[in-house]
Length: 112
Length: 114
Image 1 (cartoon, chains in turn orange, cyan):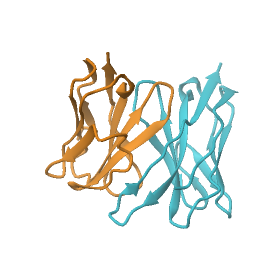
Image 2: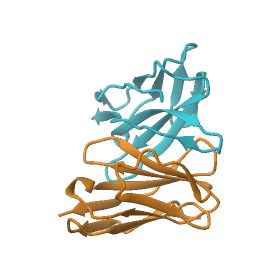
Image 3: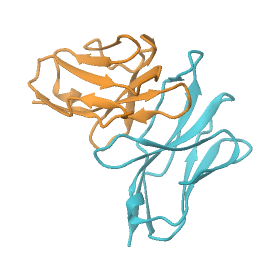
């Protein structure tokens, strides 16, 4: 009955490397969201899944960013050829279709 | 997308009532007004949501005037632990049942002093 979990909690990588961030939503939640939060900034919407499909990818900042969701559950956000401006906290949230989103603790990504 | 405007920061004292107002002039018929709270190093947490008039739960009240172009989050008798960032957002619900294009903005940094 745990909440949304994300892994890793912290990730330090070198510029140019690829990273994968994982989100485990609350069991049974059909909607899943990815956000990015840079230091001192608000949340920036990245992508939203309904089941395994992504009706809204409008927030992905570049083609280096991609995300998938399998089995209507776990989602991975992949950032290829990371840049220093990708450093941020990446937050995942899930929803059962109601109006409340439940957020995970986030993954803090640092690109050196 | 309805854009929201809220104060960047507010200060208050323990035991006081705090009201944070958010403007959303371009709100559409199907939009709901939702408030989240975020503590440092944590993800946001849902506080309250409303469509019109007044909504109250165990944490807060939300006042929405008839024209729905603004809303006010009211926190009764705040304590030091209410120090957080509060986000107002307008949620548009897509045909798939999920929210499309959520925009949180920078929120209001509320600081409660002893």
